[in-house]
Image (cartoon, rainbow, N blue to C red):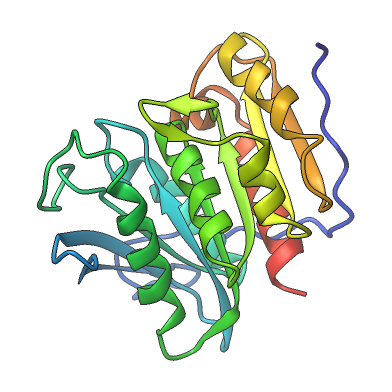
Length: 241
C-alpha cells in the first residue's frame, strides 16, 4: 500500500501558540477539569477553550498506559483554530480513578467526556467530534457508533480488536453517513490492515492519512510533523461548517 493523503478543501488554518493561561496575546486557555462516568468513576481532564462562541468541540482519547498530556499540542491547535477540546485520562490512568485494565468499561469514559463537553456553555452540541489513538482510536469509533450526536470521528492507529474493544465493519455501518478519518503508519501492518477493512464500510466519507513515519498512536503525532496539522484541518473542516 502506498502512502496517500486526500486533499482537504479547507483554507490553511492559523494555529496560535497555546499556554496554560490566556494572559498573553495568542495564548489559548487550558484548565484542569473533573467529571464522572455513569458508574461513578472520576475522570480528570484538560479543557482547551476556544475564544469562538459558540464553538464546536472535540474529545481527545489517549493510548493505553499513557495520559491526556499526549494531546496537549493538538488541543492547543484546535482551540486556536476555533474548536474547543477536552483531553482526559481514561480510568486508571493519569489523574483518573478506576482500574487501568477495565478496557471495555472505558467506552463509558468517552461517553461521559462527550456529554460533559456538549453541556458546556458556549459550545455547539450539534458539532461534537471525537479523536483517539491506538486503544483511544477504537474507543472513539465505538463511541461514535453508540452516540449519533457525535458528528465526526478521527482514529489514529486503530486495530480491529484491541483486547476486546472491537471495531469492525459493523461499527462503521452504525456510524453511517458521518465522516471518519483514519490514519496509520505504512510501517504498522496491523493498523494498515484495519484501515483496509474499515475504509470501505458505511456510506459516509472515509478519509485516510498514511504516514511514512514508523510510529504508532500518539507517537505518530511526534514522528510525523504533518499529522497534527492534517488532523486539526480535517476536524475543522467537518465541525466548523
